[in-house]
Image 1: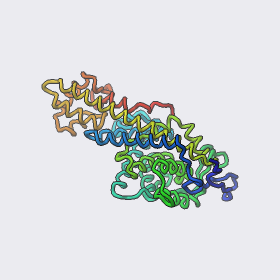
Image 2: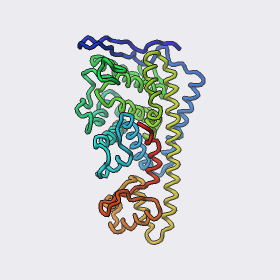
Image 3: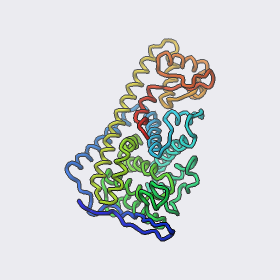
Image 4: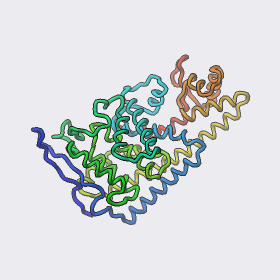
Length: 388
């Protein structure tokens, strides 16, 4: 269906430099998205995949074990799209207050993403709606430390930003001027709350994500917050009880096509192609997350059985293993604090786990050692090695 440009340009008159800003039309599109049989079937497949993923949270003995690592993987992948050089191990080491091999600001950005998602989920659980106020709160957490602290955390921009290039005049895309941001975001908030019409959940998330990226309401952190919105909308609309979908994996793997579609949809109004792409991303990542959960369950059960074959010390080793399920990078001191076992017992347990090949000491030092539950981390690392 031909809709044409989804907005209008405004010529800059505030400075001597010539450029045009793009102000998007409010959602939903007009005419509405056309749901072909193929697109509807794909949407149904996406909802089915999300349902399977959501059901995993009911089957797991301790869903917090999975959320801990899933959230960190999504944080890492989302930050990597923005160019950070961190890794999952760097993030886990930083949380242990251990030295990391990458710039500290890179790790801080990933840590901030984890904290921002946690804040959003907590506020939604308190009954707070996904609103402009909550998005500002989450943005403030996202830019609380590291790079971006000087970019007005928690406040909509009062100056012009741009995407690509060195200035608005040679940019690939220039979002709305600052005096249009609040109006654009206010209309987006109405759309999120099913005004003027109710919108199906996957269509709502797909359209809202692109609209947010088009408005680019903050000076920094828009990409990360736009991806955070996906998890928060799935949670607030009761599609996923827990934040188990790391869609940044798919967007990172198909980044060029992702950026092309953002721009093409603005210019042509072909929302159907964008919704198709977004739905495919949901199917792929939901199925991948379900597969990962099953593989981890199998790993944990296998390792428990191997530990059970130990004689005298098996009970203590099980305690250490249980701690590593919650945090797969740990120091003997941290494990001693968590289990209340004697430090000598903790070290003896780690020796047994090393013999079984379940953990590996990663520093090579005699003091201040750090142990890694390597198979667990390797499974969660899959996809983070994609080129930036």
